[in-house]
Length: 172
Image 1 (spheres, rainbow, N blue to C red):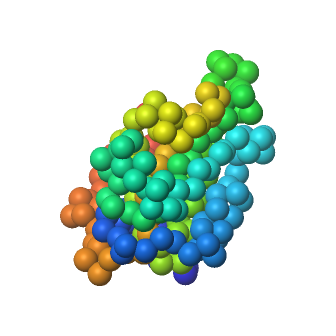
Image 2: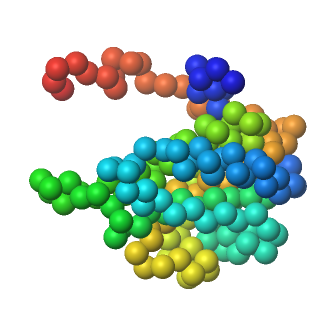
Image 3: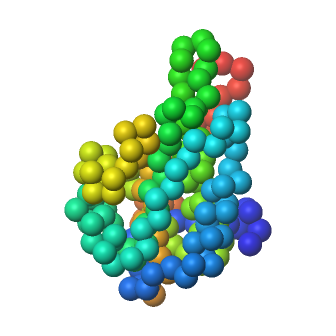
């Protein structure tokens, strides 16, 4: 799909068919995340793929925003493998994980897989339920699947602030 069309048509899918993703589709989505840029190419992302009935049932105990998706991917970042900005010690790994998740969302849409970025989840519950190591920080939950026939963007999807309110040149 042409990039302009891809970013214009992608939306957060919240209604899915009751069908787990095919492994080939998972591989394409993961490959896009794997190719994402990260600070100094440290690649601190860690991705947990949930593609079974058992793991999805466990996920439902960690978030109400699962939208009955049949597949999910939890993007985490390893704080111990992060580039650190020398001026203030800020870590690049949270941003790296978000860039990875964005690449994955766009790749998913490109192959006809619906996806919704979820930040409304309980990190402690996620950590305990899926045995996530302490140095891995859950960052973005991507619930995904094949969109149902009823799937459509929410009305607010088409509303954006005017460009003049969000873009500045030379200073604020």
